[in-house]
Length: 142
Image 1 (cartoon, helix red, strand yellow):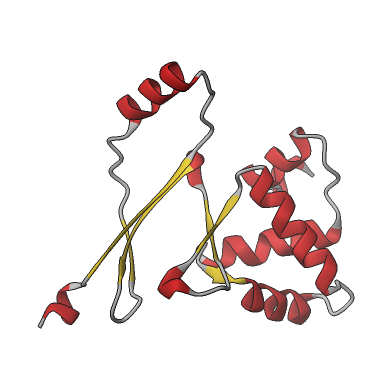
Image 2 (spheres, one colour):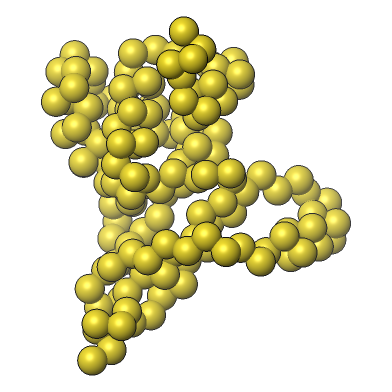
């Protein structure tokens, strides 16, 4: 069975949480989405996969995944509704166009020195980060 589990499902199990059908379905939806998905989209896709999973279960699962740093909510276009992003290796980076809301991901992270300094100065143990820059994409600059 462990061969079929994604690294995030293993992380959930290793943190002491049950691998319920609802949790695994929500995780599948998040992973299949590429990691940028609103709660409304999660609800729709979960309902398509399993109509027996209720709205409350989906939101409890999103909260659990957020607390475990599997996902992070981000607010694109100053929306009150978060877009959830997967947190590969504990961090995630975006440039968000303020005109068309295009999300451009980038992988190069040069924050390890800053993270180490923050841990020392603030006496904390960081487990991840989400970086968002806002500006105009190439098309919207024209």
